[in-house]
Every structure is written in C-alpha cells, then in structure tokens.
Image (cartoon, rainbow, N blue to C red):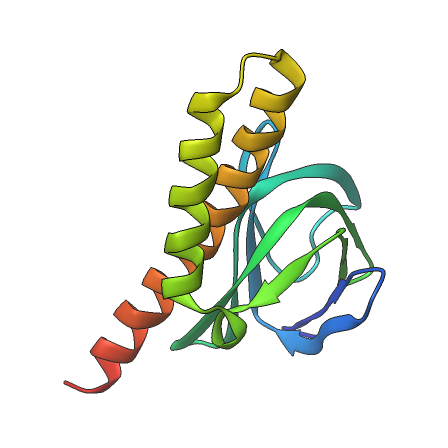
Length: 144
C-alpha cells in the first residue's frame, strides 16, 4: 500500500506542481481539511488561502491558492485554480504593497461590486503573505 499521494496543482497557464507528498492541508470554503493516503473520494471548493503539503515527514512546503476546486480520488489530489503560486515564487514585499494598494482603493469605492473585487484582491494578497511567512518560519527552523 502506498503511503503517498500524487499532488497536482494546475492553473490555466501551467502545471504549478506535480509530485508525491505525504499529506495535503487545504482550506475549503467550509473549513480546513487534511488529506492523507487512502482518503475517501472528495470534491470540494477551495477558499483563497494557503495550501500546505508535506514532501517528507519533516519537510513541509506551501502554496498560495486563489480558490478553485480540489478532487481527491485513488491517492491523487488534483487542485484546479485560476491562480496558484509556490512558496519560493512569492515576493513578500510586492504582496505587501499589493495588499496596501487594494486596501486604499477599497476605501475609495462606493459600488458594492467594486468593494467586493477589492476584498478578493486583499484576500489574494493575504494568502501570499501567509505563504511567505510560512516559508520564512520554516527556513528559520532549518537554520537553528
């Protein structure tokens, strides 16, 4: 019996990740879930947030996933999202600036749709910042 999952993160532009992992932790729209090998089949909508995955028992990585869907079936986890970025692809300073810009723009909007669009942009920036922070903390542990 396999003790790993095949994780695929796919966007319209590219295959972001395709590798075997020990577990996947994601935030669905109705809460966080952990997928381990031999998980029951599942199809769920994902929230805009950080996705974590363990490459080995002591090495965890992350990605910013901007919503989408996750399918779990036969030890395969497939994530389809409009946009996803791996931890090493994220520029933390740019994500900070983007968040601040969208927050300022949100304050200037009165139309509900415009405000909602800014809130989604802020959520994407926050997901990137959580991933960047996770990577920084993880690197700090390895330097001790």
